[in-house]
Length: 239
Ligand code: SAM
View (cartoon, rainbow, N blue to C red):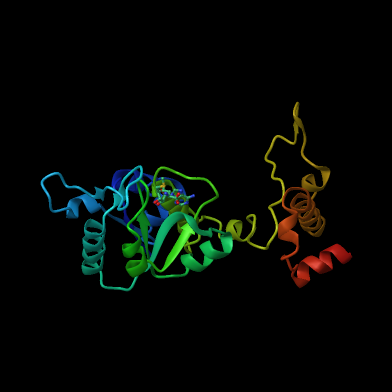
């Protein structure tokens, strides 16, 4: 998969994409992250990328031209079609389901806003989708882009050392994940639950499923209305 990022802070995005699982995915050739700085495409002496808002008001707005040229350069470097996403607090809220769908695409491009945002005409002509990482306002789209790159990158086949871990994460089956423990079994902070100390795998699966259901009910009851347990899970609970 290829992810192109249009950003005024390419070093930040590149560094985020070089660490941990996503960095490993890049080194394994599963993911390629490229950055495009609109300032490199500004034509005036000061490399201006922003302008005063038409109609007055506070702040600045990202101008059309440097962004349009950056996107054109991105397409020229690789003509494969890219699904263009504008990171925006006004976009649809990012979910694990959307992340999984994006992870299956061969190429996406992320447009990071700054200031008051991006000229609306560029968004209307260039952007396929707007996504928000939550109901709060960041000063720029770079952190949101890094979130998206991480979430999508770790789902690339072969990125995680144990492919199963992604299938057991929160939201993947509609529920929150169960609690996890590592050795020592006994510690001043408490004991590892007895069922996890034995080798009864069906009992462990049942315990984990019940913990997931309980946690989801307590912490995110909204998820339960959309969750459909698979046959194996239903059979476990019936036992
Ligand atoms: N004036 C805009 C508004 O109220 O909708 C906010 C602009 S914000 C200060 C600057 C940039 O940060 C945005 O263009 C967007 O790219 C990014 N951004 C801010 N909050 C975000 C969020 N919750 N999710 C994704 N991107 C966000």
